[in-house]
Length: 267
Image 1 (cartoon, rainbow, N blue to C red):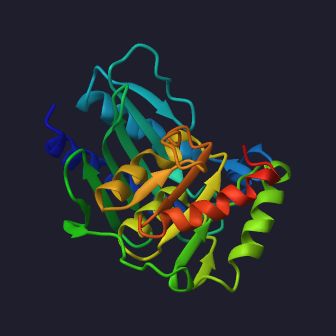
Image 2: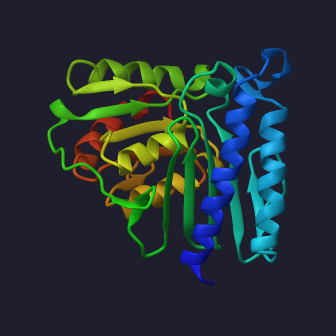
């Protein structure tokens, strides 16, 4: 499998799908939204985006299975599997806000092989494949070298399961607010992982995500020199249940804070 060539094809697909999302966003009406769960939305745009992506990926790699947010297949016995989020940042999209993106990754049974994240609003395509640098629109990117928490710009993610996550996130904000360079909540996990890869942020925390939210972005971040773990510092982050990402330099220091706060229920 020629990963570089395949990544180029996936980039083209992501950009084409992004053009569809951009056009739909210009005249989208909120009455087309369906609430999957509390504050977790989907629309015909998500579903049509996924249909287009899955159709093209089947042509590129017929032997691969799929894990896609809106239900296009699941990994069974296939050696390879596409992990697809056809519209990450749906809440932003339906309100006409940035960022939102297309996220596509290919993995085998052991690891992620390539990742592409196309952020529609800024026309930015982030990508990497196993063993490559990370790229943004053809230029190599790397994580920041910030080592002082007082200067660290940190992203947070708030899961839809508020009752389960609230005790942890409230105490995390109390611990970080005023002690780091800044906190932001942007609403697209895939994009935010890439922003760390590009040196725009230093770290991000979130729990209770899906694998499609983080598969592509986690590889891009790692290839840019960053680090991704679960909240215990291990490698059990691929499911999305616990995802802590950073530039790698401040990872251990922030991990100690997470460990102190885990008693508040994010297991």
